[in-house]
Length: 388
Image 1: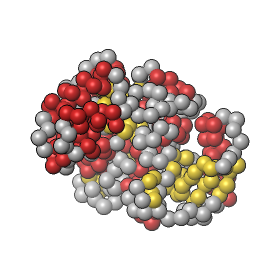
Image 2: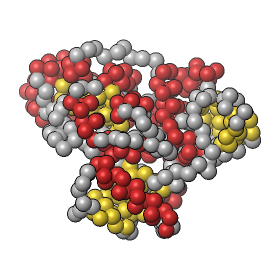
Image 3: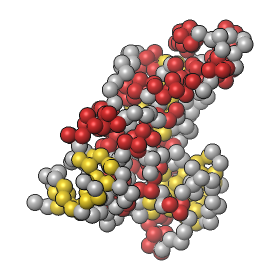
Image 4: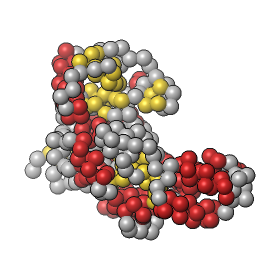
């Protein structure tokens, strides 16, 4: 029977766990958590999965902007081409919709119709902050009118807001927009999101775009298991951070008999699937170029498994996120494309071997994403950003 070490834990291929414990569960060090998370995120070794299967496994890709989902898959998949994801969007196999943390995500059609109902409670809480601007507005009527408008033809938010203002002229315009977005599962129709051919944001309902109804609000249990498969080992608070939900403890407790537990260096209880990968913490982690807002950096309450404490906030400037660079599995710098150059800005000094590996990964990323376009690769000096 073979064994792999996991921080201070030894895990056999049978799924049993032995080793040093913190409290009643084995302890996992930061590097063990890092390697486990990278393996789940398809960042330790590039995956042969299709783009659609990867979007499903990752429970969606954060997509405030058009290009990040493409770069996210380029970092994770072997043989990925941007046209693959673009074709899925055009064929309505994946969609762009507000879900977790009130942000736009690229989801499979099936996940769009299940995850959006799951996080509806968070959208209802978000809407509560805008009640003052909605005095006198019947929200059920607003939802019905907005649905009728966007299902008659896709509308921009400005067009939808103008139509709602005509009905409720004394309401706050922004609050009307938020109400429509929170009450309805609005997807961004193509050509928005297509590679090399995106357009302005126009909206219709997920049900209308996909030609089938949304699922009833599901119990979170199945999503807990999927979250652990993509982001574990993780705490209850970690998943609540990812989903933008509260009160998930009961779901974890129901699932406890099916899960294994660990402790992080601070003693926080972590849950995991028994047979999920937990590689040796010394497993090599090649450099990876990630897009802005990548879920790897946003889906845990404690981000030290990826973000060294000294670099906290360095990937942000105000409310804007930089594209990020991983070296040895951890945040190590930012990058950008400008004037025919890939500019890499490390936070600290890279060794000669690390610079060579980063350069090789940069060349691969450029080939995948930009074909034969000529880019120089330059190493610059980063300016510290804000805190996030």
